[in-house]
Length: 148
Image 1 (cartoon, rainbow, N blue to C red):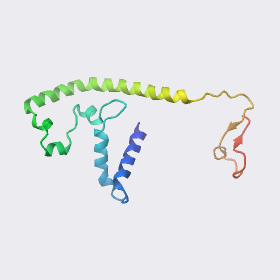
Image 2: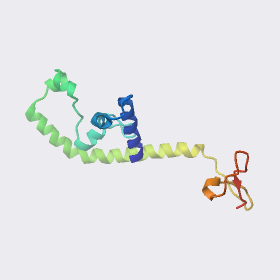
Image 3: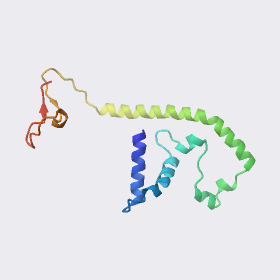
Image 4: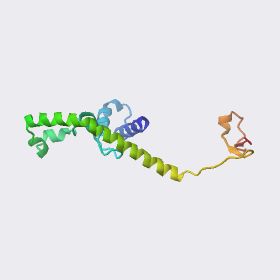
């Protein structure tokens, strides 16, 4: 999961950079914000929501009057935030269950495409010559080693 998140961040930085590769550190906060506020398909929540218990308010909503920001009652908002924090642990548990279900679904799809093979004694096994440290036999040389 960490490798997938890192690849997503790398792709986001590449997309924002264009030709100038030297300013990637300036683009990192924007890419991280996008990553943290994007709904993930595996659990239908944002990482920001799972951390803080509320949805993020983007800067555009603060600067421009929106229904979401104009209808805020400070006293009631504090009570709602405390309630959200109390329910956050339950929400995280539900997300863990949903992610596990999603992983099993992906695993089932993958396993349905895999063809199992049974190897018998004296069968030839494909093994890269690099892996076995054999000398290079050229383009037309055998790539098979064995029997094993």
